[in-house]
Amino acid sequence: MNLNDRMNNNKASNYLLEFWTPVLLTFTIYLGIRNYIFEARYIPSGSMLPGLQINDRLLIEKLTLKRRSPKRGEIVVFNSPFSFDRILGVNMKKSVIKCAVLNFPIVASITGIRDPVCDAYIKRVVAIPGDKVLINTQGEVIINNIRMDEPYVKNYCFLDRFDDSSCPTYSGKVPNGHVLVLGDNRENSWDSRFWPAGPFLPEDQIIGKAIWRFWPISRFGYLYF
View 1 (cartoon, rainbow, N blue to C red):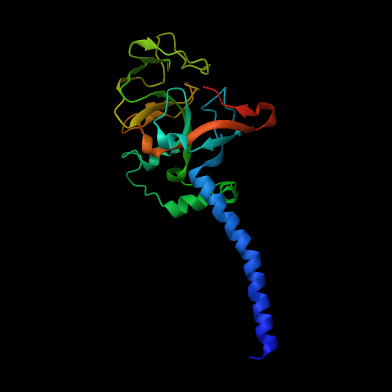
View 2: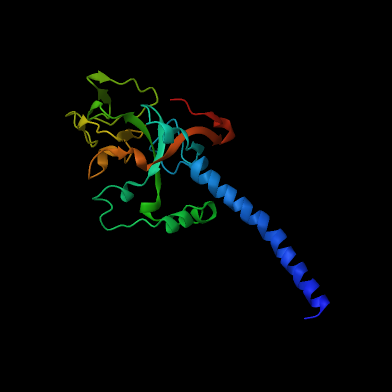
Protein backbone atom coordinates (compact mmCIF):
# COMPACT_ATOMS: atom_id res chain seq x y z
CA MET A 1 0.00 0.00 0.00
CA ASN A 2 1.48 3.33 -1.06
CA LEU A 3 1.41 6.63 0.83
CA ASN A 4 -1.66 7.95 -1.03
CA ASP A 5 -3.64 4.82 -0.22
CA ARG A 6 -2.74 5.08 3.47
CA MET A 7 -3.71 8.76 3.53
CA ASN A 8 -7.06 7.98 1.87
CA ASN A 9 -7.73 5.20 4.37
CA ASN A 10 -6.90 7.53 7.25
CA LYS A 11 -9.28 10.17 5.87
CA ALA A 12 -12.05 7.59 5.57
CA SER A 13 -11.43 6.36 9.11
CA ASN A 14 -11.41 9.92 10.46
CA TYR A 15 -14.63 10.70 8.61
CA LEU A 16 -16.37 7.65 10.06
CA LEU A 17 -15.05 8.49 13.53
CA GLU A 18 -16.18 12.12 13.28
CA PHE A 19 -19.61 11.08 11.99
CA TRP A 20 -20.42 8.20 14.34
CA THR A 21 -18.86 9.48 17.57
CA PRO A 22 -21.42 12.28 18.15
CA VAL A 23 -24.25 10.00 16.97
CA LEU A 24 -23.30 7.25 19.44
CA LEU A 25 -22.62 9.79 22.19
CA THR A 26 -26.03 11.40 21.67
CA PHE A 27 -27.73 8.00 21.68
CA THR A 28 -25.88 6.97 24.86
CA ILE A 29 -26.82 10.20 26.65
CA TYR A 30 -30.42 9.80 25.50
CA LEU A 31 -30.61 6.25 26.84
CA GLY A 32 -28.93 7.27 30.10
CA ILE A 33 -31.35 10.12 30.68
CA ARG A 34 -34.36 8.05 29.61
CA ASN A 35 -33.47 5.05 31.75
CA TYR A 36 -32.40 6.82 34.92
CA ILE A 37 -33.64 10.43 35.08
CA PHE A 38 -36.54 11.48 32.83
CA GLU A 39 -38.61 10.15 29.99
CA ALA A 40 -41.64 11.30 28.04
CA ARG A 41 -44.88 9.34 27.99
CA TYR A 42 -48.28 9.89 26.44
CA ILE A 43 -51.76 9.06 27.70
CA PRO A 44 -53.23 6.28 25.49
CA SER A 45 -56.64 5.89 27.16
CA GLY A 46 -59.30 7.71 29.15
CA SER A 47 -58.58 5.99 32.47
CA MET A 48 -57.26 9.20 34.05
CA LEU A 49 -60.00 11.55 32.84
CA PRO A 50 -60.76 14.33 33.34
CA GLY A 51 -57.39 15.47 34.67
CA LEU A 52 -55.29 13.71 32.04
CA GLN A 53 -56.67 13.67 28.53
CA ILE A 54 -56.01 11.11 25.79
CA ASN A 55 -52.75 11.95 23.95
CA ASP A 56 -51.50 14.31 26.67
CA ARG A 57 -47.68 14.23 26.77
CA LEU A 58 -46.13 13.93 30.22
CA LEU A 59 -42.66 14.11 31.71
CA ILE A 60 -41.89 11.17 34.00
CA GLU A 61 -39.27 11.74 36.71
CA LYS A 62 -37.42 8.63 37.91
CA LEU A 63 -35.09 9.67 40.73
CA THR A 64 -37.50 10.53 43.56
CA LEU A 65 -39.13 7.12 43.88
CA LYS A 66 -35.71 5.45 43.93
CA ARG A 67 -35.11 7.21 47.26
CA ARG A 68 -38.52 6.87 48.89
CA SER A 69 -41.87 5.10 48.63
CA PRO A 70 -44.79 6.67 46.73
CA LYS A 71 -47.24 8.91 48.55
CA ARG A 72 -51.00 8.81 48.34
CA GLY A 73 -52.20 10.93 45.45
CA GLU A 74 -49.06 10.71 43.34
CA ILE A 75 -49.46 9.72 39.69
CA VAL A 76 -47.09 6.90 38.82
CA VAL A 77 -46.06 5.07 35.67
CA PHE A 78 -45.32 1.36 36.11
CA ASN A 79 -44.59 -1.82 34.22
CA SER A 80 -47.48 -3.73 32.70
CA PRO A 81 -49.34 -6.07 35.07
CA PHE A 82 -48.69 -8.73 32.43
CA SER A 83 -45.05 -8.61 33.55
CA PHE A 84 -45.62 -9.11 37.29
CA ASP A 85 -49.12 -10.54 37.85
CA ARG A 86 -48.52 -14.29 38.12
CA ILE A 87 -51.88 -15.11 36.49
CA LEU A 88 -51.83 -12.55 33.69
CA GLY A 89 -48.21 -13.29 32.88
CA VAL A 90 -48.32 -17.07 33.21
CA ASN A 91 -47.60 -17.61 29.50
CA MET A 92 -45.74 -14.38 28.86
CA LYS A 93 -42.04 -13.64 29.15
CA LYS A 94 -40.59 -10.16 29.18
CA SER A 95 -37.52 -9.53 27.04
CA VAL A 96 -35.62 -6.39 28.03
CA ILE A 97 -34.17 -5.99 24.53
CA LYS A 98 -37.50 -6.57 22.79
CA CYS A 99 -39.30 -4.12 25.08
CA ALA A 100 -36.58 -1.50 24.62
CA VAL A 101 -37.03 -1.74 20.84
CA LEU A 102 -40.84 -1.66 20.98
CA ASN A 103 -40.83 1.31 23.36
CA PHE A 104 -38.36 3.34 21.29
CA PRO A 105 -40.29 6.46 20.15
CA ILE A 106 -40.01 5.81 16.40
CA VAL A 107 -41.03 2.17 16.71
CA ALA A 108 -43.72 2.93 19.29
CA SER A 109 -45.37 5.31 16.84
CA ILE A 110 -45.96 2.49 14.33
CA THR A 111 -49.54 1.32 14.75
CA GLY A 112 -50.01 -2.34 15.61
CA ILE A 113 -46.51 -3.07 16.88
CA ARG A 114 -46.83 -3.75 20.60
CA ASP A 115 -46.62 -6.45 23.23
CA PRO A 116 -48.84 -6.25 26.37
CA VAL A 117 -45.94 -7.31 28.57
CA CYS A 118 -43.89 -4.32 27.36
CA ASP A 119 -46.58 -1.70 27.98
CA ALA A 120 -46.48 0.88 30.76
CA TYR A 121 -49.52 1.99 32.76
CA ILE A 122 -50.28 5.28 34.47
CA LYS A 123 -52.51 5.42 37.58
CA ARG A 124 -52.81 7.24 40.88
CA VAL A 125 -51.58 5.86 44.19
CA VAL A 126 -54.57 5.65 46.56
CA ALA A 127 -53.19 3.49 49.37
CA ILE A 128 -49.73 2.77 50.75
CA PRO A 129 -48.22 0.01 52.93
CA GLY A 130 -50.11 -0.51 56.18
CA ASP A 131 -53.32 1.17 55.00
CA LYS A 132 -56.54 -0.65 55.78
CA VAL A 133 -58.44 0.16 52.62
CA LEU A 134 -61.97 -0.30 51.35
CA ILE A 135 -63.02 0.41 47.77
CA ASN A 136 -66.79 0.47 47.52
CA THR A 137 -69.10 -0.17 44.57
CA GLN A 138 -68.80 3.44 43.42
CA GLY A 139 -65.02 3.31 43.38
CA GLU A 140 -64.70 5.53 46.44
CA VAL A 141 -61.66 4.94 48.65
CA ILE A 142 -62.00 4.60 52.43
CA ILE A 143 -58.78 4.31 54.42
CA ASN A 144 -58.84 3.43 58.13
CA ASN A 145 -62.60 4.17 58.09
CA ILE A 146 -62.07 7.66 56.63
CA ARG A 147 -63.36 8.45 53.14
CA MET A 148 -60.59 10.02 51.11
CA ASP A 149 -61.11 13.46 49.59
CA GLU A 150 -60.31 12.97 45.90
CA PRO A 151 -61.10 16.20 44.03
CA TYR A 152 -59.48 14.82 40.88
CA VAL A 153 -62.16 12.09 40.57
CA LYS A 154 -65.25 13.24 38.70
CA ASN A 155 -66.47 9.93 37.26
CA TYR A 156 -67.36 7.40 39.93
CA CYS A 157 -68.90 4.03 39.08
CA PHE A 158 -72.53 4.12 38.06
CA LEU A 159 -75.05 2.51 40.42
CA ASP A 160 -78.23 1.02 39.02
CA ARG A 161 -81.60 1.16 40.77
CA PHE A 162 -80.59 -1.82 42.91
CA ASP A 163 -77.39 -0.02 44.00
CA ASP A 164 -75.34 -2.53 42.02
CA SER A 165 -72.27 -1.60 40.00
CA SER A 166 -70.01 -3.25 37.42
CA CYS A 167 -66.99 -2.00 39.38
CA PRO A 168 -65.37 -4.55 41.72
CA THR A 169 -64.92 -3.81 45.41
CA TYR A 170 -61.96 -4.51 47.66
CA SER A 171 -61.31 -4.66 51.37
CA GLY A 172 -57.96 -5.45 52.96
CA LYS A 173 -54.57 -4.21 54.11
CA VAL A 174 -51.79 -3.05 51.80
CA PRO A 175 -48.64 -5.17 52.39
CA ASN A 176 -45.13 -3.80 52.74
CA GLY A 177 -43.38 -2.98 49.50
CA HIS A 178 -46.65 -2.49 47.62
CA VAL A 179 -49.17 0.23 46.82
CA LEU A 180 -52.72 0.24 45.50
CA VAL A 181 -53.35 2.22 42.32
CA LEU A 182 -56.56 3.35 40.61
CA GLY A 183 -57.45 5.44 37.61
CA ASP A 184 -59.18 8.76 38.23
CA ASN A 185 -61.92 7.67 35.85
CA ARG A 186 -63.22 5.04 38.26
CA GLU A 187 -65.97 3.88 35.91
CA ASN A 188 -63.55 3.15 33.07
CA SER A 189 -60.12 2.14 34.32
CA TRP A 190 -58.43 -1.26 34.24
CA ASP A 191 -56.45 -0.93 37.45
CA SER A 192 -55.65 -2.72 40.73
CA ARG A 193 -59.26 -3.74 41.19
CA PHE A 194 -59.15 -6.02 38.14
CA TRP A 195 -55.76 -7.76 38.44
CA PRO A 196 -56.51 -11.46 38.94
CA ALA A 197 -53.55 -12.31 41.19
CA GLY A 198 -54.26 -9.43 43.59
CA PRO A 199 -54.72 -5.67 43.66
CA PHE A 200 -51.26 -4.61 44.78
CA LEU A 201 -48.53 -3.01 42.69
CA PRO A 202 -44.98 -3.94 43.79
CA GLU A 203 -43.00 -0.74 44.34
CA ASP A 204 -40.08 -2.16 42.36
CA GLN A 205 -42.31 -2.19 39.26
CA ILE A 206 -42.75 1.58 39.35
CA ILE A 207 -40.88 3.41 36.58
CA GLY A 208 -41.35 6.94 37.93
CA LYS A 209 -43.88 9.61 38.75
CA ALA A 210 -45.59 12.02 36.40
CA ILE A 211 -44.63 15.60 37.22
CA TRP A 212 -45.20 17.78 34.18
CA ARG A 213 -47.53 18.00 31.17
CA PHE A 214 -45.71 19.51 28.20
CA TRP A 215 -48.33 18.93 25.51
CA PRO A 216 -50.75 20.29 24.48
CA ILE A 217 -49.51 23.79 25.19
CA SER A 218 -52.96 24.85 26.36
CA ARG A 219 -52.62 22.47 29.35
CA PHE A 220 -48.88 22.94 29.85
CA GLY A 221 -47.82 22.84 33.49
CA TYR A 222 -46.95 21.00 36.69
CA LEU A 223 -49.16 18.09 37.73
CA TYR A 224 -50.47 18.70 41.23
CA PHE A 225 -51.98 16.02 43.41
